[in-house]
Image (tube, rainbow, N blue to C red; front, side, top):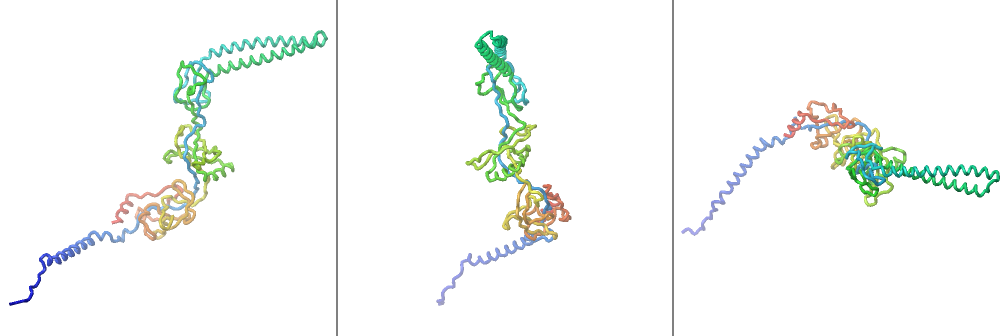
Length: 417
């Protein structure tokens, strides 16, 4: 009898798992081979296409305007509500709503007949009192001769002198009344006090106009010239006041709401007399010629005031300026078609140009397009693969930037595969 213990056998499923693992390993090896054969090979550097296509700009010199920017609104130099200066019925309206009028143009007519009658009455009174004065003056001359002959008392002469003075005062009063009546007739003929655009009329023919009417007859807004009132931070005020104190006339440009389109050029004419303590800003006024009505009353604008100009500055395009770990830098193109990271110090900027205080000199070439694929020491090529980088003549002073052609775009695309 065999008393030995039975040999334990592993379950069937446990004996099969090494074969499964082996199969997975084999499949992984095959997949890796396929990847490196067909896909991974694309990740290998392509010795023929390892140059990055870029655009270059040659650093030059130019003038940079130091410009302060402020928000403002178009404000008419004259915004007049035309009111009647006498009461009366409107006989005529001589303007069209929205019409451009010149100073002195006829706008409306008040019925002048009551004032013409008042003028006739005042004229009659004046003539009567002038006759009395003339008679008293003749008597005064006669009395002076009689006193000289000792024919009448001096008291009579003094009385006649007083009577003449009285009549002279009466005549002057009468003359004032005549002048007032004539002025009232002039007021019946209402004219434009300034040139500009009339608004919507507030009265119609037949209405009785009075001096107490709040809305008046029509509103008149001067459009040319016109002004822009804008604000600047108080920190920018000393530079502006320094220029004004030296007698410099500062240029101001008005741009649209998006700050992209220039509307007009003007001159700074006034600075307010105090700083707004709640906002820390000061108001300024600039005047603009506005013959084509590019600036419209109450229009929102951006004001650019040129405080100073830096002459013969080393100028680079904004597109070449990068910011990162080294600080503010550019990619400088070398003669061997490689780039170097060059840290720069910036000064004043204007539009798409910036002043370089340190780091670049006139004649240097910097990369403006394709910088995202560059690193220090990387090789580059121009979009035209046969071009020499030294042949790029674009300068920042002109604001131009070379654009890649179709062949450059294809080369750029193929270099990444």
